[in-house]
Image (cartoon, helix red, strand yellow):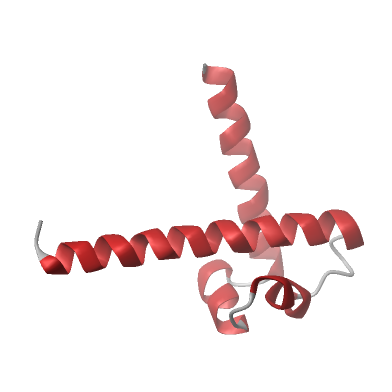
Length: 82
């Protein structure tokens, strides 16, 4: 494997981990506080990072919520496929 490939793989893994961390924190906060009262700032406070990261990845709070729903649906469907 080339060095550039290793760097890309590492960056890709970090991006996936970051996305998973954000989704987990968002799920916890939406459950604890409700969707309407949960702010992007609260999610950032829990995960670290910046608004830019969240908006770049999800586009909006609604986009983040939809990604969370899609992720949970994918996992549920995968579990049913076993």
